Image 1 (cartoon, rainbow, N blue to C red):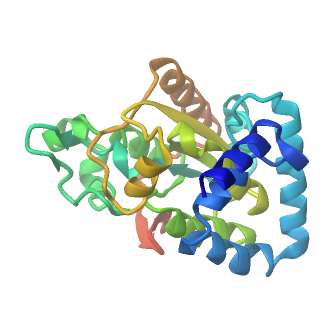
Image 2: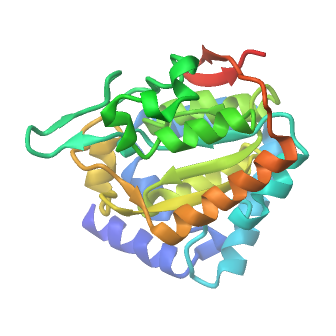
Length: 271
């Protein structure tokens, strides 16, 4: 096994066949989500998947060994979001506040799930002065407030399998959002970009700078809810995200209060 891991690492380093997921694929060979993705998306929609695979290969070639941060640039998201009906903001569940002293989540609706206290009560969402104290220290809270202002759907990401079911499949079936901003660990930027490409999603990826998973073991644990660190985005990246959302607010902002429906783990606009 060590030999195979080393061999696939070399293939990734050389971007063999313009593909840099050799070792990741090997490490997850006996997990459910890659097989689900293979049979539910890649084989069911071969033409769309082929186009996405070709896009991913072009992104690899253009990257010149640098990390890929999605199928679209963050600076382009305001323009992309302007011309689409559904826009998605997708933070990671690990952005929820965490109590290091007691080693437990502080989120009032729980840690490893797709729920947000503020989106469950729109009356509170629009009044930050009435937010629970823990929400003020949550990285997700300001994003969901911005989402309401720009009429965007919200999806709090948990496991790779759920992301495939809740985001990738609806997108390739043209039933869900096909563009958005996603927040995740640098470790998973490459496989996530592959997922976006093959699901025909124009997505910008914003990596965490602190509290993120740095090894496959840490990532695998987080994928099943074992994550005892709150994750944060670098200040510069955070300002860039907020700038794009502010532009979207001016382009597609809504003065009326929106109502969300929790549908398939996604907070979708009800009206």
